Image: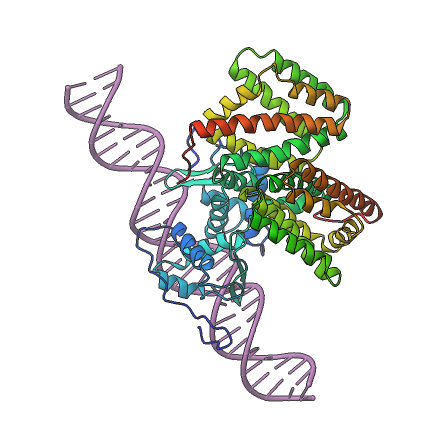
Length: 247
Length: 247
DNA sequence: GTCGGTGAATTTGTCCGACAACCTGTTGAT
DNA sequence: ATCAACAGGTTGTCGGACAAATTCACCGAC
Protein backbone atom coordinates (compact mmCIF):
# COMPACT_ATOMS: atom_id res chain seq x y z
CA UNK A 1 0.00 0.00 0.00
CA UNK A 2 2.69 2.47 0.95
CA UNK A 3 5.32 0.58 -0.93
CA UNK A 4 6.18 3.24 -3.49
CA UNK A 5 9.74 4.21 -2.80
CA UNK A 6 9.46 7.34 -4.90
CA UNK A 7 6.70 8.69 -2.72
CA UNK A 8 8.19 9.38 0.66
CA UNK A 9 5.64 9.75 3.38
CA UNK A 10 7.76 10.64 6.36
CA UNK A 11 4.88 11.07 8.71
CA UNK A 12 4.77 10.91 12.46
CA UNK A 13 2.00 8.78 13.83
CA UNK A 14 -1.25 10.66 13.60
CA UNK A 15 -3.10 11.40 16.77
CA UNK A 16 -6.06 9.14 17.34
CA UNK A 17 -9.28 11.07 17.15
CA UNK A 18 -11.28 10.49 20.32
CA UNK A 19 -14.49 8.57 19.84
CA UNK A 20 -17.49 10.84 19.72
CA UNK A 21 -15.85 13.54 17.65
CA UNK A 22 -16.94 14.60 14.23
CA UNK A 23 -15.75 14.90 10.72
CA UNK A 24 -15.05 18.48 11.74
CA UNK A 25 -12.31 17.26 14.03
CA UNK A 26 -10.73 15.32 11.22
CA UNK A 27 -10.94 18.43 9.06
CA UNK A 28 -9.27 20.48 11.75
CA UNK A 29 -6.60 17.90 12.38
CA UNK A 30 -5.73 17.48 8.72
CA UNK A 31 -5.69 21.24 8.26
CA UNK A 32 -3.35 21.65 11.20
CA UNK A 33 -1.02 19.06 9.74
CA UNK A 34 -0.94 20.96 6.49
CA UNK A 35 -0.50 24.38 8.06
CA UNK A 36 2.15 22.98 10.38
CA UNK A 37 4.12 21.61 7.47
CA UNK A 38 3.75 17.95 8.38
CA UNK A 39 1.94 17.47 5.10
CA UNK A 40 3.99 19.74 2.88
CA UNK A 41 2.74 21.24 -0.38
CA UNK A 42 3.04 18.87 -3.34
CA UNK A 43 3.39 15.90 -1.02
CA UNK A 44 0.96 13.00 -1.15
CA UNK A 45 -1.16 12.25 1.89
CA UNK A 46 -1.49 8.77 3.33
CA UNK A 47 -4.23 6.86 1.57
CA UNK A 48 -7.76 7.11 2.91
CA UNK A 49 -7.76 3.66 4.48
CA UNK A 50 -4.55 4.45 6.31
CA UNK A 51 -5.79 7.82 7.53
CA UNK A 52 -8.98 6.17 8.75
CA UNK A 53 -7.04 3.54 10.66
CA UNK A 54 -4.63 5.99 12.20
CA UNK A 55 -7.32 8.47 13.16
CA UNK A 56 -9.54 5.75 14.48
CA UNK A 57 -12.51 6.70 12.31
CA UNK A 58 -14.34 5.20 9.35
CA UNK A 59 -13.27 5.76 5.81
CA UNK A 60 -16.47 7.66 5.04
CA UNK A 61 -15.62 10.15 7.76
CA UNK A 62 -12.18 10.65 6.27
CA UNK A 63 -13.65 11.06 2.85
CA UNK A 64 -16.05 13.76 3.97
CA UNK A 65 -13.22 15.66 5.59
CA UNK A 66 -10.99 15.28 2.57
CA UNK A 67 -13.75 16.43 0.27
CA UNK A 68 -14.14 19.62 2.29
CA UNK A 69 -10.43 20.34 2.13
CA UNK A 70 -10.35 19.59 -1.58
CA UNK A 71 -13.12 22.07 -2.17
CA UNK A 72 -11.38 24.59 0.04
CA UNK A 73 -8.37 24.37 -2.24
CA UNK A 74 -5.94 22.84 0.26
CA UNK A 75 -5.95 19.38 -1.32
CA UNK A 76 -6.25 17.83 -4.73
CA UNK A 77 -7.53 14.28 -5.11
CA UNK A 78 -6.68 12.09 -8.08
CA UNK A 79 -8.60 8.85 -8.44
CA UNK A 80 -6.30 5.87 -8.59
CA UNK A 81 -3.32 7.93 -7.54
CA UNK A 82 -3.82 9.73 -4.24
CA UNK A 83 -4.52 13.02 -2.52
CA UNK A 84 -1.98 15.84 -2.76
CA UNK A 85 -1.45 19.00 -0.80
CA UNK A 86 -2.00 22.00 -3.04
CA UNK A 87 -1.83 24.90 -0.62
CA UNK A 88 -0.69 25.37 2.93
CA UNK A 89 -3.25 27.90 4.11
CA UNK A 90 -6.92 27.90 3.38
CA UNK A 91 -6.88 31.65 3.04
CA UNK A 92 -4.22 31.33 0.36
CA UNK A 93 -6.44 29.10 -1.72
CA UNK A 94 -9.53 31.24 -1.20
CA UNK A 95 -7.74 34.48 -1.96
CA UNK A 96 -6.04 32.93 -4.94
CA UNK A 97 -9.35 31.93 -6.45
CA UNK A 98 -10.79 35.37 -5.82
CA UNK A 99 -7.78 37.30 -7.10
CA UNK A 100 -7.50 35.22 -10.25
CA UNK A 101 -11.09 36.17 -11.05
CA UNK A 102 -10.41 39.86 -10.59
CA UNK A 103 -9.44 42.60 -12.98
CA UNK A 104 -5.68 43.09 -12.81
CA UNK A 105 -5.90 46.81 -12.09
CA UNK A 106 -8.27 46.11 -9.24
CA UNK A 107 -5.87 43.59 -7.80
CA UNK A 108 -3.02 46.08 -8.01
CA UNK A 109 -5.11 48.68 -6.26
CA UNK A 110 -5.65 46.24 -3.39
CA UNK A 111 -1.95 45.54 -3.39
CA UNK A 112 -1.28 49.25 -3.22
CA UNK A 113 -3.48 49.55 -0.14
CA UNK A 114 -1.49 46.87 1.62
CA UNK A 115 1.95 48.05 0.57
CA UNK A 116 1.26 51.58 1.78
CA UNK A 117 -0.07 50.36 5.12
CA UNK A 118 2.82 47.91 5.41
CA UNK A 119 5.32 50.69 4.87
CA UNK A 120 3.67 52.84 7.51
CA UNK A 121 3.55 50.01 10.04
CA UNK A 122 7.09 48.85 9.28
CA UNK A 123 8.39 52.33 10.06
CA UNK A 124 6.39 52.24 13.28
CA UNK A 125 7.16 48.76 14.51
CA UNK A 126 10.41 47.58 13.00
CA UNK A 127 13.12 46.30 15.32
CA UNK A 128 16.87 46.79 15.03
CA UNK A 129 17.19 43.25 13.71
CA UNK A 130 14.43 43.94 11.17
CA UNK A 131 16.36 46.98 9.98
CA UNK A 132 19.67 45.16 9.71
CA UNK A 133 18.00 42.53 7.58
CA UNK A 134 16.28 45.18 5.51
CA UNK A 135 19.60 46.82 4.71
CA UNK A 136 21.06 43.45 3.72
CA UNK A 137 18.15 42.81 1.39
CA UNK A 138 18.37 46.30 -0.11
CA UNK A 139 22.09 45.81 -0.75
CA UNK A 140 21.45 42.39 -2.31
CA UNK A 141 18.86 43.99 -4.55
CA UNK A 142 21.25 46.70 -5.68
CA UNK A 143 23.93 44.10 -6.38
CA UNK A 144 21.70 41.67 -8.23
CA UNK A 145 23.33 40.31 -11.36
CA UNK A 146 20.42 40.01 -13.83
CA UNK A 147 16.66 40.41 -14.15
CA UNK A 148 15.79 37.12 -12.50
CA UNK A 149 17.95 37.58 -9.43
CA UNK A 150 16.97 41.24 -9.28
CA UNK A 151 13.33 40.24 -9.15
CA UNK A 152 13.95 37.69 -6.45
CA UNK A 153 15.88 40.18 -4.38
CA UNK A 154 13.18 42.83 -4.85
CA UNK A 155 10.48 40.42 -3.85
CA UNK A 156 12.42 39.37 -0.75
CA UNK A 157 12.80 43.00 0.25
CA UNK A 158 9.11 43.78 -0.12
CA UNK A 159 8.05 40.73 1.78
CA UNK A 160 10.47 41.64 4.54
CA UNK A 161 8.84 45.07 4.82
CA UNK A 162 5.55 43.29 5.41
CA UNK A 163 7.20 41.12 8.05
CA UNK A 164 8.52 44.27 9.80
CA UNK A 165 4.94 45.38 10.38
CA UNK A 166 4.48 42.76 13.05
CA UNK A 167 1.01 42.16 11.62
CA UNK A 168 0.64 38.51 10.54
CA UNK A 169 -2.85 39.06 9.15
CA UNK A 170 -1.54 41.74 6.82
CA UNK A 171 1.27 39.39 5.82
CA UNK A 172 -1.16 36.60 4.97
CA UNK A 173 -3.43 38.88 2.99
CA UNK A 174 -0.52 40.47 1.16
CA UNK A 175 0.89 37.13 0.10
CA UNK A 176 -2.59 35.82 -0.71
CA UNK A 177 -3.10 38.70 -3.14
CA UNK A 178 0.38 39.10 -4.57
CA UNK A 179 1.35 35.46 -5.11
CA UNK A 180 -1.52 34.72 -7.51
CA UNK A 181 -0.69 37.90 -9.40
CA UNK A 182 2.85 36.69 -9.83
CA UNK A 183 1.94 33.29 -11.18
CA UNK A 184 -1.09 34.24 -13.25
CA UNK A 185 0.29 37.14 -15.20
CA UNK A 186 3.91 36.30 -14.81
CA UNK A 187 5.15 37.84 -18.01
CA UNK A 188 3.29 41.06 -17.52
CA UNK A 189 4.14 41.37 -13.86
CA UNK A 190 7.78 40.80 -14.50
CA UNK A 191 7.80 43.41 -17.20
CA UNK A 192 6.14 45.89 -14.89
CA UNK A 193 8.50 45.01 -12.09
CA UNK A 194 11.48 45.77 -14.27
CA UNK A 195 10.19 49.09 -15.42
CA UNK A 196 9.02 50.18 -12.05
CA UNK A 197 12.20 49.18 -10.39
CA UNK A 198 14.48 51.14 -12.62
CA UNK A 199 17.41 51.69 -10.22
CA UNK A 200 17.30 55.39 -11.06
CA UNK A 201 13.92 55.67 -9.33
CA UNK A 202 14.24 56.75 -5.71
CA UNK A 203 11.11 55.27 -4.16
CA UNK A 204 12.53 52.08 -2.74
CA UNK A 205 15.60 53.78 -1.33
CA UNK A 206 13.27 56.37 0.19
CA UNK A 207 11.20 53.59 1.68
CA UNK A 208 14.20 51.94 3.28
CA UNK A 209 15.43 55.26 4.64
CA UNK A 210 12.01 56.14 6.07
CA UNK A 211 11.80 52.78 7.81
CA UNK A 212 15.28 53.28 9.20
CA UNK A 213 14.26 56.77 10.39
CA UNK A 214 11.04 55.39 11.84
CA UNK A 215 9.05 57.90 9.85
CA UNK A 216 5.69 56.29 9.01
CA UNK A 217 4.46 59.19 6.92
CA UNK A 218 7.53 59.27 4.70
CA UNK A 219 7.45 55.48 4.39
CA UNK A 220 3.80 55.48 3.34
CA UNK A 221 4.52 58.27 0.88
CA UNK A 222 7.43 56.39 -0.69
CA UNK A 223 5.34 53.21 -1.00
CA UNK A 224 2.46 55.15 -2.51
CA UNK A 225 4.71 56.83 -5.11
CA UNK A 226 6.17 53.48 -5.92
CA UNK A 227 2.83 51.77 -6.44
CA UNK A 228 1.47 54.75 -8.37
CA UNK A 229 4.33 54.39 -10.82
CA UNK A 230 3.56 50.68 -11.12
CA UNK A 231 -0.10 51.36 -11.77
CA UNK A 232 0.71 53.94 -14.42
CA UNK A 233 2.98 51.52 -16.27
CA UNK A 234 0.50 48.71 -15.87
CA UNK A 235 -2.36 50.79 -17.21
CA UNK A 236 -0.36 51.71 -20.28
CA UNK A 237 0.70 48.13 -20.90
CA UNK A 238 -2.83 46.84 -20.53
CA UNK A 239 -4.02 49.32 -23.11
CA UNK A 240 -1.35 48.05 -25.48
CA UNK A 241 -1.97 44.34 -24.80
CA UNK A 242 -5.15 43.56 -22.88
CA UNK A 243 -5.00 40.36 -20.83
CA UNK A 244 -7.51 37.71 -21.76
CA UNK A 245 -8.39 35.89 -18.60
CA UNK A 246 -11.12 33.80 -17.09
CA UNK A 247 -13.80 33.94 -19.69
CA UNK B 1 -40.77 11.83 5.85
CA UNK B 2 -41.76 15.25 4.59
CA UNK B 3 -44.94 15.17 6.56
CA UNK B 4 -44.27 18.15 8.76
CA UNK B 5 -46.81 20.70 7.82
CA UNK B 6 -44.96 23.45 9.62
CA UNK B 7 -41.90 22.97 7.41
CA UNK B 8 -42.94 23.92 3.94
CA UNK B 9 -40.64 22.65 1.25
CA UNK B 10 -42.08 24.18 -1.83
CA UNK B 11 -39.52 22.74 -4.16
CA UNK B 12 -39.67 22.07 -7.83
CA UNK B 13 -38.57 18.63 -8.85
CA UNK B 14 -34.80 18.46 -8.78
CA UNK B 15 -32.95 17.67 -11.96
CA UNK B 16 -31.65 14.14 -12.10
CA UNK B 17 -27.88 14.07 -12.09
CA UNK B 18 -26.60 12.12 -15.08
CA UNK B 19 -24.81 8.92 -14.24
CA UNK B 20 -21.08 9.25 -14.32
CA UNK B 21 -20.97 12.69 -12.69
CA UNK B 22 -19.36 13.49 -9.37
CA UNK B 23 -20.08 14.86 -5.98
CA UNK B 24 -18.85 18.09 -7.51
CA UNK B 25 -21.89 18.19 -9.71
CA UNK B 26 -24.17 17.75 -6.74
CA UNK B 27 -22.26 20.56 -5.01
CA UNK B 28 -22.72 22.80 -8.01
CA UNK B 29 -26.37 21.95 -8.37
CA UNK B 30 -27.20 22.55 -4.75
CA UNK B 31 -25.23 25.78 -4.76
CA UNK B 32 -27.11 27.00 -7.80
CA UNK B 33 -30.40 26.24 -6.12
CA UNK B 34 -29.34 28.28 -3.12
CA UNK B 35 -27.93 31.20 -5.09
CA UNK B 36 -30.98 31.15 -7.33
CA UNK B 37 -33.31 31.37 -4.36
CA UNK B 38 -34.96 28.00 -4.84
CA UNK B 39 -33.61 27.02 -1.46
CA UNK B 40 -34.17 30.27 0.41
CA UNK B 41 -32.22 31.31 3.49
CA UNK B 42 -33.61 29.81 6.73
CA UNK B 43 -35.48 27.17 4.81
CA UNK B 44 -34.87 23.50 5.40
CA UNK B 45 -33.55 21.39 2.55
CA UNK B 46 -35.16 18.07 1.65
CA UNK B 47 -33.71 15.28 3.76
CA UNK B 48 -30.62 13.49 2.52
CA UNK B 49 -32.47 10.36 1.48
CA UNK B 50 -34.89 12.43 -0.55
CA UNK B 51 -32.13 14.47 -2.20
CA UNK B 52 -30.31 11.25 -3.06
CA UNK B 53 -33.38 9.75 -4.64
CA UNK B 54 -34.27 12.86 -6.60
CA UNK B 55 -30.71 13.43 -7.80
CA UNK B 56 -30.27 9.78 -8.64
CA UNK B 57 -27.14 9.36 -6.50
CA UNK B 58 -26.23 7.58 -3.29
CA UNK B 59 -26.72 9.12 0.11
CA UNK B 60 -22.97 9.20 0.69
CA UNK B 61 -22.53 11.34 -2.38
CA UNK B 62 -25.15 13.75 -1.11
CA UNK B 63 -23.52 13.82 2.29
CA UNK B 64 -20.12 14.72 0.88
CA UNK B 65 -21.65 17.54 -1.12
CA UNK B 66 -23.62 18.81 1.84
CA UNK B 67 -20.56 18.69 4.06
CA UNK B 68 -18.67 20.85 1.61
CA UNK B 69 -21.45 23.43 1.52
CA UNK B 70 -21.74 23.39 5.30
CA UNK B 71 -18.04 24.14 5.59
CA UNK B 72 -18.36 26.86 2.97
CA UNK B 73 -20.93 28.58 5.15
CA UNK B 74 -23.95 28.12 2.89
CA UNK B 75 -25.65 25.42 4.94
CA UNK B 76 -26.05 24.41 8.54
CA UNK B 77 -26.73 20.81 9.45
CA UNK B 78 -28.47 19.84 12.66
CA UNK B 79 -28.44 16.18 13.58
CA UNK B 80 -31.95 14.84 14.05
CA UNK B 81 -33.50 17.93 12.61
CA UNK B 82 -32.32 18.73 9.10
CA UNK B 83 -30.11 20.89 6.96
CA UNK B 84 -30.86 24.61 6.72
CA UNK B 85 -29.74 27.31 4.34
CA UNK B 86 -27.66 29.80 6.28
CA UNK B 87 -26.45 32.09 3.51
CA UNK B 88 -27.26 32.69 -0.09
CA UNK B 89 -23.71 33.28 -1.28
CA UNK B 90 -20.59 31.36 -0.49
CA UNK B 91 -19.08 33.54 2.18
CA UNK B 92 -15.34 33.48 2.32
CA UNK B 93 -15.31 31.19 5.28
CA UNK B 94 -11.55 30.91 5.17
CA UNK B 95 -11.02 34.66 5.34
CA UNK B 96 -13.55 34.92 8.11
CA UNK B 97 -11.82 32.28 10.17
CA UNK B 98 -8.47 33.94 9.62
CA UNK B 99 -9.73 37.35 10.72
CA UNK B 100 -11.38 35.87 13.80
CA UNK B 101 -8.04 34.35 14.77
CA UNK B 102 -6.18 37.61 14.40
CA UNK B 103 -5.28 40.21 17.00
CA UNK B 104 -7.94 42.90 16.91
CA UNK B 105 -5.46 45.71 16.39
CA UNK B 106 -3.96 43.82 13.45
CA UNK B 107 -7.37 43.42 11.93
CA UNK B 108 -8.08 47.12 12.34
CA UNK B 109 -4.78 47.97 10.71
CA UNK B 110 -5.78 45.91 7.70
CA UNK B 111 -9.13 47.63 7.73
CA UNK B 112 -7.36 50.99 7.79
CA UNK B 113 -5.38 50.03 4.69
CA UNK B 114 -8.55 49.28 2.82
CA UNK B 115 -10.56 52.26 4.02
CA UNK B 116 -7.81 54.67 3.01
CA UNK B 117 -7.47 53.10 -0.44
CA UNK B 118 -11.24 52.98 -0.82
CA UNK B 119 -11.48 56.68 -0.06
CA UNK B 120 -8.80 57.50 -2.59
CA UNK B 121 -10.43 55.36 -5.29
CA UNK B 122 -13.93 56.59 -4.52
CA UNK B 123 -12.77 60.17 -5.06
CA UNK B 124 -11.20 59.07 -8.33
CA UNK B 125 -13.95 56.90 -9.75
CA UNK B 126 -17.24 57.90 -8.23
CA UNK B 127 -20.13 58.69 -10.56
CA UNK B 128 -22.77 61.38 -10.14
CA UNK B 129 -25.23 58.74 -9.04
CA UNK B 130 -22.68 57.43 -6.50
CA UNK B 131 -22.34 60.93 -5.11
CA UNK B 132 -26.05 61.54 -4.87
CA UNK B 133 -26.44 58.33 -2.93
CA UNK B 134 -23.46 59.22 -0.74
CA UNK B 135 -25.08 62.51 0.20
CA UNK B 136 -28.32 60.73 1.04
CA UNK B 137 -26.48 58.28 3.27
CA UNK B 138 -24.52 61.05 4.96
CA UNK B 139 -27.73 62.92 5.66
CA UNK B 140 -29.39 59.78 7.01
CA UNK B 141 -26.41 59.29 9.30
CA UNK B 142 -26.63 62.84 10.62
CA UNK B 143 -30.34 62.43 11.24
CA UNK B 144 -30.14 59.03 12.91
CA UNK B 145 -32.27 58.82 16.01
CA UNK B 146 -30.26 56.61 18.36
CA UNK B 147 -27.06 54.57 18.64
CA UNK B 148 -28.41 51.57 16.77
CA UNK B 149 -29.76 53.44 13.81
CA UNK B 150 -26.72 55.71 13.83
CA UNK B 151 -24.49 52.68 13.54
CA UNK B 152 -26.51 51.21 10.74
CA UNK B 153 -26.45 54.50 8.87
CA UNK B 154 -22.73 54.87 9.40
CA UNK B 155 -22.07 51.35 8.18
CA UNK B 156 -24.19 51.92 5.10
CA UNK B 157 -22.21 55.06 4.31
CA UNK B 158 -18.83 53.34 4.63
CA UNK B 159 -19.86 50.40 2.53
CA UNK B 160 -21.13 52.79 -0.10
CA UNK B 161 -17.74 54.45 -0.23
CA UNK B 162 -16.24 51.06 -1.00
CA UNK B 163 -18.82 50.56 -3.73
CA UNK B 164 -17.89 53.94 -5.25
CA UNK B 165 -14.38 52.61 -5.86
CA UNK B 166 -15.60 50.42 -8.69
CA UNK B 167 -13.27 47.72 -7.38
CA UNK B 168 -15.23 44.56 -6.54
CA UNK B 169 -12.15 42.78 -5.20
CA UNK B 170 -11.59 45.54 -2.68
CA UNK B 171 -15.27 45.36 -1.76
CA UNK B 172 -15.10 41.63 -1.12
CA UNK B 173 -11.93 41.88 0.94
CA UNK B 174 -13.27 44.83 2.92
CA UNK B 175 -16.44 42.98 3.80
CA UNK B 176 -14.46 39.81 4.44
CA UNK B 177 -12.41 41.62 7.05
CA UNK B 178 -14.98 43.96 8.55
CA UNK B 179 -17.97 41.63 8.85
CA UNK B 180 -16.22 39.14 11.14
CA UNK B 181 -14.99 42.04 13.27
CA UNK B 182 -18.52 43.25 13.69
CA UNK B 183 -19.95 39.95 14.78
CA UNK B 184 -17.05 38.73 16.90
CA UNK B 185 -16.38 41.74 19.07
CA UNK B 186 -19.71 43.38 18.69
CA UNK B 187 -19.82 45.15 22.02
CA UNK B 188 -16.33 46.53 21.70
CA UNK B 189 -16.68 47.51 18.09
CA UNK B 190 -19.91 49.30 18.74
CA UNK B 191 -18.36 51.19 21.60
CA UNK B 192 -15.46 52.21 19.41
CA UNK B 193 -17.79 53.17 16.60
CA UNK B 194 -19.71 55.48 18.88
CA UNK B 195 -16.67 57.18 20.22
CA UNK B 196 -14.95 57.54 16.92
CA UNK B 197 -18.04 58.86 15.24
CA UNK B 198 -18.61 61.67 17.66
CA UNK B 199 -20.52 64.06 15.40
CA UNK B 200 -18.15 66.81 16.45
CA UNK B 201 -15.32 65.06 14.63
CA UNK B 202 -14.87 66.32 11.08
CA UNK B 203 -13.33 63.32 9.35
CA UNK B 204 -16.40 61.78 7.81
CA UNK B 205 -17.71 65.09 6.55
CA UNK B 206 -14.24 65.78 5.14
CA UNK B 207 -14.32 62.40 3.43
CA UNK B 208 -17.69 63.06 1.81
CA UNK B 209 -16.55 66.51 0.67
CA UNK B 210 -13.30 65.17 -0.78
CA UNK B 211 -15.19 62.50 -2.71
CA UNK B 212 -17.57 65.14 -3.99
CA UNK B 213 -14.60 67.31 -4.99
CA UNK B 214 -12.89 64.32 -6.63
CA UNK B 215 -9.82 64.93 -4.53
CA UNK B 216 -8.19 61.53 -3.85
CA UNK B 217 -5.47 62.92 -1.62
CA UNK B 218 -7.89 64.75 0.65
CA UNK B 219 -10.17 61.70 0.75
CA UNK B 220 -7.33 59.39 1.72
CA UNK B 221 -6.22 61.86 4.35
CA UNK B 222 -9.69 62.11 5.87
CA UNK B 223 -10.05 58.32 5.96
CA UNK B 224 -6.60 57.96 7.51
CA UNK B 225 -7.37 60.51 10.24
CA UNK B 226 -10.62 58.76 10.90
CA UNK B 227 -9.08 55.31 11.25
CA UNK B 228 -6.20 56.66 13.31
CA UNK B 229 -8.74 58.01 15.80
CA UNK B 230 -10.42 54.61 15.85
CA UNK B 231 -7.16 52.83 16.47
CA UNK B 232 -6.22 55.18 19.29
CA UNK B 233 -9.54 54.59 21.05
CA UNK B 234 -9.34 50.88 20.41
CA UNK B 235 -5.83 50.64 21.83
CA UNK B 236 -6.92 52.41 25.01
CA UNK B 237 -9.97 50.24 25.41
CA UNK B 238 -8.00 47.05 24.89
CA UNK B 239 -5.58 48.09 27.59
CA UNK B 240 -8.52 48.61 29.93
CA UNK B 241 -10.32 45.37 29.00
CA UNK B 242 -8.30 42.91 26.94
CA UNK B 243 -10.37 40.65 24.71
CA UNK B 244 -10.09 36.96 25.42
CA UNK B 245 -10.49 35.24 22.13
CA UNK B 246 -9.64 31.93 20.48
CA UNK B 247 -7.37 30.32 23.00
C1' DG C 1 19.16 -1.41 -26.37
C1' DT C 2 14.23 1.25 -26.71
C1' DC C 3 9.37 1.48 -27.07
C1' DG C 4 4.69 0.13 -26.69
C1' DG C 5 1.05 -2.81 -25.01
C1' DT C 6 -1.03 -5.46 -21.39
C1' DG C 7 -2.33 -6.72 -16.98
C1' DA C 8 -1.96 -6.42 -12.00
C1' DA C 9 -1.92 -3.65 -8.04
C1' DT C 10 -3.36 0.31 -5.84
C1' DT C 11 -6.19 4.21 -4.84
C1' DT C 12 -10.16 7.12 -5.06
C1' DG C 13 -15.35 7.37 -6.16
C1' DT C 14 -19.81 5.61 -5.40
C1' DC C 15 -23.40 2.92 -3.47
C1' DC C 16 -25.68 0.35 0.08
C1' DG C 17 -27.25 -1.26 4.58
C1' DA C 18 -27.07 -1.03 9.46
C1' DC C 19 -27.13 1.30 13.56
C1' DA C 20 -25.99 5.27 16.85
C1' DA C 21 -26.99 9.88 18.27
C1' DC C 22 -29.85 13.61 18.23
C1' DC C 23 -34.06 16.49 17.64
C1' DT C 24 -38.98 17.49 17.47
C1' DG C 25 -43.61 16.73 18.48
C1' DT C 26 -47.18 14.19 20.84
C1' DT C 27 -49.23 12.15 24.74
C1' DG C 28 -50.13 11.19 29.42
C1' DA C 29 -49.44 12.16 34.28
C1' DT C 30 -49.36 15.49 37.86
C1' DA D 1 -50.59 24.67 33.28
C1' DT D 2 -45.83 21.98 33.32
C1' DC D 3 -42.91 18.09 32.80
C1' DA D 4 -41.42 13.55 31.48
C1' DA D 5 -41.58 9.69 28.45
C1' DC D 6 -41.91 7.98 24.07
C1' DA D 7 -42.30 7.59 19.02
C1' DG D 8 -40.92 8.96 14.69
C1' DG D 9 -37.80 11.13 11.81
C1' DT D 10 -33.21 12.93 10.55
C1' DT D 11 -28.27 13.38 10.51
C1' DG D 12 -23.63 11.05 11.73
C1' DT D 13 -20.76 7.15 11.46
C1' DC D 14 -19.17 2.69 10.12
C1' DG D 15 -18.05 -1.12 7.16
C1' DG D 16 -18.41 -3.80 2.99
C1' DA D 17 -18.65 -4.25 -1.92
C1' DC D 18 -17.54 -2.93 -6.31
C1' DA D 19 -16.59 0.58 -10.21
C1' DA D 20 -13.38 3.77 -12.26
C1' DA D 21 -8.98 5.63 -12.82
C1' DT D 22 -3.95 5.74 -12.35
C1' DT D 23 0.55 3.87 -11.90
C1' DC D 24 3.96 0.54 -12.55
C1' DA D 25 6.06 -3.76 -13.80
C1' DC D 26 6.67 -7.09 -17.17
C1' DC D 27 7.06 -8.88 -21.67
C1' DG D 28 7.42 -8.97 -26.55
C1' DA D 29 8.54 -6.67 -30.85
C1' DC D 30 11.79 -4.07 -33.34
